[in-house]
Image (tube, rainbow, N blue to C red; front, side):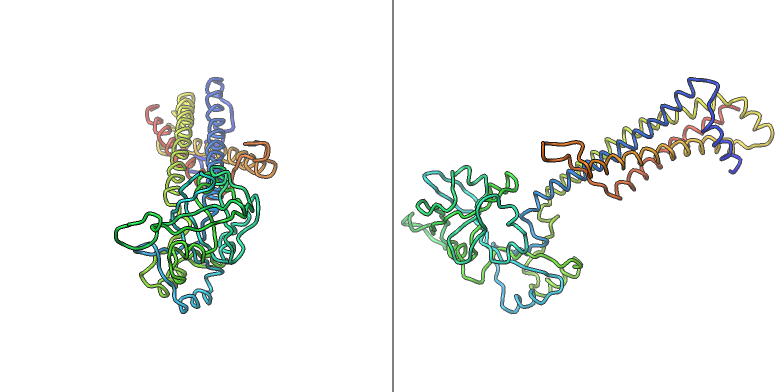
Length: 397
């Protein structure tokens, strides 16, 4: 193998007398560099877009959320609250009440979700940073924080105490309704803040104090829709799930961020797979050029190979020469292409050469996992291509 590697190095760094073979080999080498760059850059760009998308999607999501197994609401005892407070895995928790209701303002109407939150909510979600006008909720008031899309559709202003935002929620209970006016609970709300995250969330929620939401929905003070959790930095998910299971039993289901946006995560993973397969197709086409270059070199060195065979070098060793040459070309192409691609991604992260808008750089993300994917892909396909091409040596004898 040492002899094969030595000869392979000589063939790799020396030029053939046939200019066409030199050109084909050069094209194959440049192709490997370019395809390596393309694969890593595509993966890094998609990783950046994924992070960018999830930052918006997760803006209103906690680290974990507890939901009831059956029905809409569940209760929490004083003992269970004490256990949550003493947990080493939980930094903060917030009780919330959420329901779809009807809003009316100056003869304009909309159906959206009212979400009652307690004073810990902004510690769990850091929602205040998404306010672009007004202030967050004050305790024991009828103030609400609305989404920018809701504000636009209803033409809502802030701190307009002469024109209240009316909200209607069906009264709980069974039986026939004799008087439609008695079928709904009503409350008058006054917007104190407007948040902006994305179009979907901006048109979905109206935030209010939890006691106001419970009163509107006819709920007692110990009934809630969800409990949202912010975990400690060293929290282990399996330990947290076991702990919550011992506190609440089987009455609740526990969802992390990925499970709260299950369809979005699946869509992003599918798109990531498509990007990878598309980029890999480019790599495969490039490595066909490498295989062609190796075959052309074998033909060009036919007389030399016969000499090697006649002096006792086996066919397997001769094949190893061109297999090693293909590996060397692949390795150096991978090394150069990956270095250039990493440089481009780092420069984009630091200096934002490519912009989406005047203030928003094109998102990219440097991830070590992407380097592993690129190296594994190029090496495996390079080995296969070199092995197949080097197999044509047997046709020269």
